[in-house]
Amino acid sequence: MNDGSIQAWEKVASQAAADYYIFRARRDKSRSPRTGRVHDVVVLESPDWVNIVAVTPDERVLLVRQYRHGTEEITLEIPGGMVDAGEPPETAAKRELKEETGYEAERWHYLGQVKPNPAFMDNRCHTFLALDAVQTGPPSFDGSEDIEVLTADLNQVSDMVQDGRIANSLVVAAFYHLDHYNNVSITATGSSI
Image (cartoon, rainbow, N blue to C red; front, top):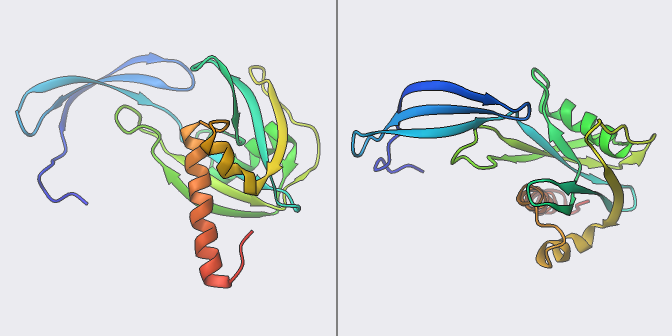
């Protein structure tokens, strides 16, 4: 997509700044190819993340409600979390679904990925579709999680995004990927979830 007028910046120096467990801050000095000037930039190094659109046999989607410190509010999202070092994203998705909801699924599809904020973050968020999700046990939250699990009619998700009940950009992107997957599935097979 680059027509050649925009060029990559040259990183001339890099230094670790701070480690906050869920991300590390790094200070870089990078040279502008347009001006030749060196600028200070901050990059947040973060593990990749996963989001799971889990659909039950009766076509209800699993949602989680939890408090978010950044916006200081309770949000409506889908299950998700960090990919552990060396862990494949699909394995992380299966683990996070079980930990946060107590649900498991046999049928999994990779829907796609987004880069949460490439302006200052270096990670990706992978989205998976888990079909025929069934509860096999209780959730097993970590010490900092306080999550309410609920289900909603899959056909109501668009309204939830439109009226702001679902406002997390990564969750909206996950449902965009699901919509694209459904459109491709309908075209290819004549049916969808």
